[in-house]
Image 1 (cartoon, one colour):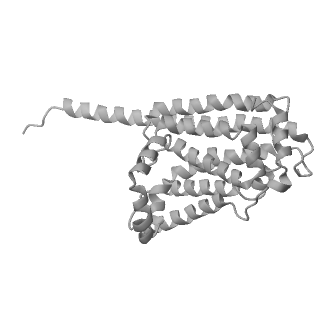
Image 2 (cartoon, one colour):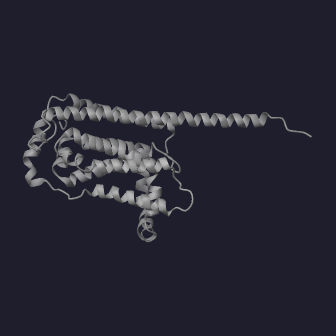
Image 3 (tube, helix red, strand yellow):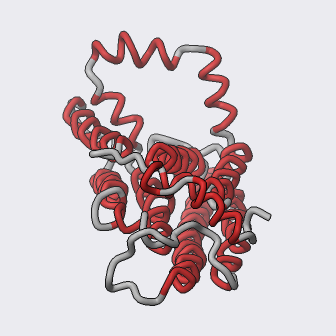
Length: 303
């Protein structure tokens, strides 16, 4: 019922008219948070003496990810996401498939913690992370299966018309949407990406299956949106840019295609990268084993 009833979406919109329900932030707090992370990462790098624990490509990857996250929450993308469904899908794609994974490649938390002042670490950070309840909760939700389930549940939850329309009409819910997409993506990609010195808990072959499951479960919703014969969400009545002349139905079809093709393609790229890393590591192991065998078979040198 949630995904097929246009009347349900219109009823929500009629009960909660945009003029009486819209709450706008001058600055998106999620945007400010990512900007702060960028500053703390820079401070953290400066705090290390001697060789840095991360490589230059990792630093570049982190700031590329942060840039994608910040751009996704600035004009023209953020205001257009309130007017056009396909732009909203581009925004989510930039958060979950570009910004977060590239940020994670830069080992952000290892560096950001060093960027926090010693006083703040001593009085706020360490007392917080040492709480047993918080440690157990994080250890649970960051495991592969709970992280995957949380990501998928969040993905489908925010595409139910009732909740999608709340986020569309109210920035409190929109902020919550951005926050849950970002958090669930971080927990998800933590199980796939393990640049030194971090290690993901999943073996490399399992990570490929992990990505396959993400692709398989999102295809159904993408296809349904692409070929739906009615509009699911309450964009009717909202101002749209003058250059968009194809209506809300085509807008929804295009959004479904963006969720389907580019998003699946990015997951496929990640899967391919994991596969080649797996092959490379297996080759390194074989070479080491060959060297060990050669040493064992080498006769001792006698004078």
